[in-house]
Amino acid sequence: MRTQVAIIGAGPAGMLLSHLLAAEGVESVVVETRTEDYVASRIRAGILEQSSVDLLHAAGLGERLAREGDQHRGIHLQWPEERHHLDFVDLTGRSVWVYGQTEVQKDLVAARTAGGQEVHYGVSGTALHDLESDSPSVTFTSADGAPTRVTASVVVGCDGSFGPSRASVPDTIRQTWEKVYPYSWLGILADVAPSTDELIYAWHPDGFAMHSMRSETVSRLYLQVPNGTDLDDWSDDRIWSSLATRLGHGQDGWTLTPGPITERSVLPMRSFVQTPMRHGRMFLAGDAAHIVPPTGAKGLNLAVADVGLLAPALVDLVRNDDSRLADAYSDTALRRVWRCTHFSWWMTTMLHTSGDEFDQQLQLSQLRWVATSEAGATGLAENYAGLPIGF
Ligand SMILES: Cc1cc2nc3c(=O)[nH]c(=O)nc-3n(C[C@H](O)[C@H](O)[C@H](O)COP(=O)(O)OP(=O)(O)OC[C@H]3O[C@@H](n4cnc5c(N)ncnc54)[C@H](O)[C@@H]3O)c2cc1C
Image 1 (cartoon, rainbow, N blue to C red):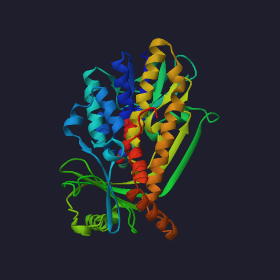
Image 2 (cartoon, rainbow, N blue to C red):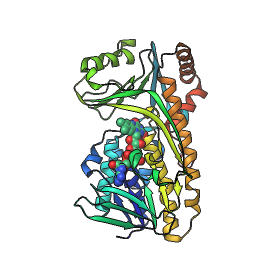
Image 3 (tube, helix red, strand yellow):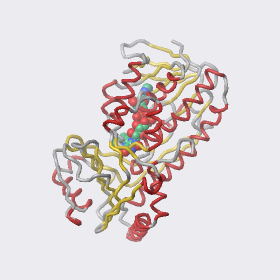
Image 4 (spheres, protein in one colour):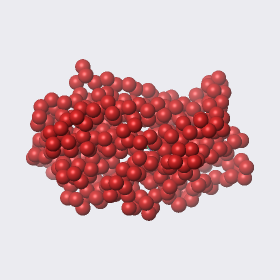
């Protein structure tokens, strides 16, 4: 099979890229190991920054987001006895939207299905070939067992943290950076109206907690837990009482309303970057090139930003034989990647307790400064609501 762009991975990065390319008349084929339903139902990110929202609107994908998404002006930042609201709109003129990754994925799949996009779900044995030539290819075994080769002008690895693309860059060229944090998140989805209007990020001596939401009737909450935590050790009662303690139930009359837990999981936290984000005719986008801990709500947004830069670069490359944007892609994308990697690390280390009493005092001092100084609050707001794509 021949196409212009072979895309590995049908997550948000891969599907958005195929959509943006199609809008410019560039053809692509997408290959994906999982089923369409599996990819669509993965419970992951929930916050879209301003640039992601703008890009989705510009790409004609914003109709349901505008109708069903929930625009938030900022977040609540708290520690015992104190809760402060940071208003991103007042501070930076930018806001964020609560709209689940599951919904973004549904919108992408609907748009690509309507556009007749070729997506091969349920493939196995994906491999990349001849990346330094002008006709790289991807081979795989299709869902019905047929060995298949897609030859293209360009291959794009949008295959997340476990796909083969990043490892296809020779060891002599690729460089990686990794930080594994000594804690994880226990995340739940609950069928209960959120007890807060906007997200609460809470520092507590017992560990970080966060109150997020997915809709008017579904809450998403997280607790810092040690690495290796067994979900069986966390009964519903233990989860809700820990959340109540850490989120300040009773503080200034605020109450946390518990409800039936419908999903729970433990998420380890790490930062990872691989450079360069291009090798020959293969480009990396999204989690295939970088992972951030979720505290800064940046993973999905970085995937959108990468693709927002990559799509016009590939259009110029395959349609006009102009490689200037493609040549600049890795350096341009990495500027934002490192900014978001720093911000995610900074939010994580400011809010999660390590047991070190000196560190706790520094964290509280930093939180007080961020919450009460306009300069401190603006720095957080600018990074959280997101810098413009191409920053
Ligand atoms: C529990 C959790 C919570 C998160 N919370 C947030 C949040 O609050 N905010 C935020 O911004 N981000 C969050 N993230 C991160 C966010 O979900 C990811 O950054 C985002 O999914 C990246 O999109 P992607 O398309 O690059 O990668 P993925 O969504 O991982 O998609 C990659 C796709 O490639 C496919 N694939 C893998 N190997 C192969 C292969 N060999 N052949 C073909 N296909 C393959 C995979 O099946 C997958 O569908 C969270 C992630 C998790 C896990």
